[in-house]
Length: 342
Image 1 (cartoon, rainbow, N blue to C red):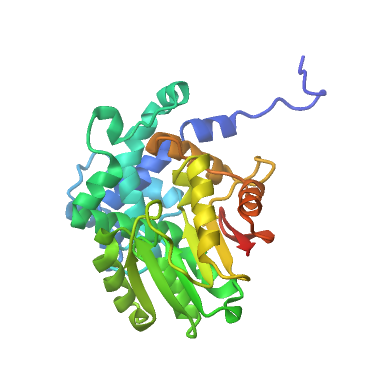
Image 2: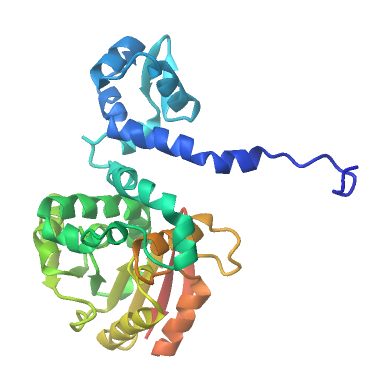
């Protein structure tokens, strides 16, 4: 006898789809690692030639490529494989729109670390390099310029859509200067400057980031209006500007550190100045933004005590620091921004 109000028995399709989701994930990650999409961006290829160029064994090559077709990443017409429009734009590593750097990092780092999620949930301890006694991620990255550049480019891929939305939709006409705190490669600063020719901006990050920031600003044609300021946002004052931005920064830290950074931004702003905090802000009801909730679990894996938060949480921290007006505004996908006005 069915106990669900006499209705049909619930389907277990969703349970299987999520429970076996790693199958699809690893298939895509391996395709990026093997340069499938970069190879097909040149021109469509038949199975045998594509398999040969990638050095794959014949046993499962057709299953691999056809799985990518069924998931919408590849197309197959008349026996020729080609990229779907989105993969051609975003996963061809020769294009400036390439966002695969983030997924490369997921493949090499996060995929194995997430196998220890249960342990993390039981212990509250990170499960990344620290777990095996290796040098912590950020120390290792900043010690190796090549790895640091790759990592910062991956962060650009994660943030590009939100950065462009902030550059277009925030009322920048009311301001003259901005400072991007924890600027990384500098994509947020670049997108803001590109969309608003009257603005001058500062990228603030550790000294090792400076050449990467300057190269990126130069390659995007906005270098004359952007400058880099080296510093540690916990140890040094933040740059003074009309607007301060923090993208994917606060979730790395515990409650006290979050409040310290918001307070330092308040001190650096003039009356009427604005703080923009953005990341995968969790919806206030904590039911809909699955990506934001999973990102918070990723902070459990990656950091000592970082966590993601709701828009209401962030707005409350801003008001506690002295900001008089706050608002939460959706940007793109899972990302939203919280704005505080001094």
